Image (cartoon, rainbow, N blue to C red):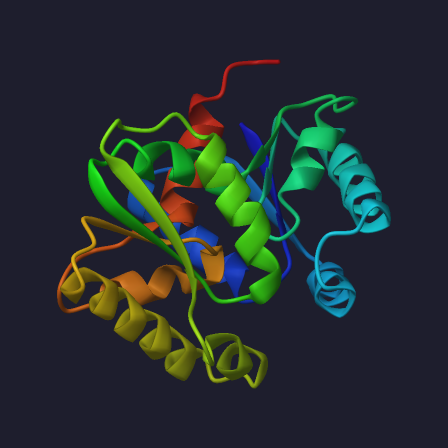
Length: 213
């Protein structure tokens, strides 16, 4: 299977290659395109504009012309995947869709952590739309100060900050902690009080399980 991933952070290429290795998916042809300018544009605009959604969707459709599956790994731009599927030659998936589906089946308190402010609203909407356990209670939080470290190139500090927020959520009674953005995945290996759900593994499993359109 030819899988193309669209990222908005260069460092996510290694994150997804590592997740593919751990899941035993390296026999698939996985290629990557990184467009940090798309996320930067969303941050400047305060979120995903109609114009940026259209631009991203057109890019996804172009990528689908030479792939069997396309995976959008940016949570801020997630809605572009829905638009792209209206005219795409291959299925386009957003990486956090499967993450939300799995998380919301957990009974109890579900705390979803985001690092980028523009991701808060689309992430909350996605998780609220997922089929949920009758006893599930959702809270979406911003990890203050994390994204500044990421943009400064301090990836270790970024992941430590996210891990500390995840540990705090567990100590406060969370039954499930979710790291909403793909760039946060490495923090799951640094937590001390629980193991959060991460999107790269969930997203890649969903990609290979997705039937033909």
